[in-house]
Amino acid sequence: MADDPLSRSPADDGVSEDQLFDRERHIRYLEMNYQILPSPYEGQEINHLTLAYFIISGLHILHALDRIDREDVINWVLSLQAHPKNEDDLNNGQFYGFHGSKSSQFDSVDNWVSVPNNSHLASTYCALAILKIVDYDFSLIDSSSISKSMKHLQQSDGSFMPIHTGAETDLRFVYCAVVISSLLDNWSGVDKEKAKNYILSCQSYDGGFGLIPGQESHGGATYCAVASLRLMGFIEDDLVSKCTSSCIIDVPLLLEWCLQRQAVDGGFQGRPNKISDTCYAFWVGGVLKILGANKFMNERTLREFLLTCQSKYGGFSKFPRQLPDLYHSYYGFTAFSMLQETGLNSLNIELGISIIHHTLI
Image (cartoon, rainbow, N blue to C red; front, side, top):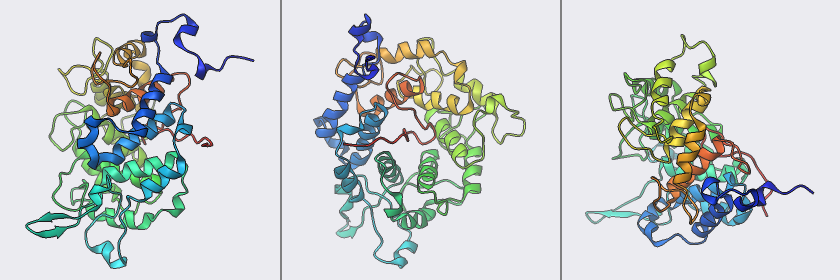
């Protein structure tokens, strides 16, 4: 019987551990965080759902989803959904998506007045992504309340706020709304034309996209823009190999901006004159993948850079030879999935998750 490639260690191939992607160690790192979050994350309780997304989606990419309790995960995620009391509530301007944690479900107090906390677009994206990963039946979700109330978050310029009042608007939340609509297969909560025009207004003179119109181009914002346009059907896959003269975005300028983000150390930077950072291997590398231009980046040197950020404890750090964190670990895993690392599930670049389903124990 042939050896199982998922169970092989670097030593089996005569290669030092710092030269190879250490899948088993990464699984142990995520398992540890799944069981109990380390104390540095105490201040991130409000983002508990987002941290769970990094862990559960990370395990899925690593082909290790059997390490979680599917029913426990589903019940916990569903417990965070906000529900309207009646149909009239859907017109009160509040968003009925998912809360980021248990504590955010309690009312806050402002000048002795009880104020309901809001569910959040980013938390809702993470919740639905987790449910998609564990193959939950989406027909059981109250998707109508999510879509109807999300419509109130879209502004007149096409942008989105993440909550119903007092929040910033930028491409991050346009992307969240678009992915939510795609996962639910319900686009009634997004005016696509307005969203498209807002995204186009964010493309800068240098080809990248800023978070808001007129702002400096940024790797994360550029990903949100391009992935959103693709999910809404306004651009095609593999644009680089097709005629781009009629494309709604400036593809040659965008391509040049993205390729210039790969630094001499092989990693990707989020903006000009910044040092390489693990997460931009996904944010910028993902844009190149959507454009069909990943063949133009230097995958060998990118891999070498990422391995300098691989921790001996499992996971990835932001910069080389630092301690790992869940955010950069997750985007390290997504980057290696895009690099077609053996033993990893393939990635849906636009959704930011793997959508390959396996039977869970």
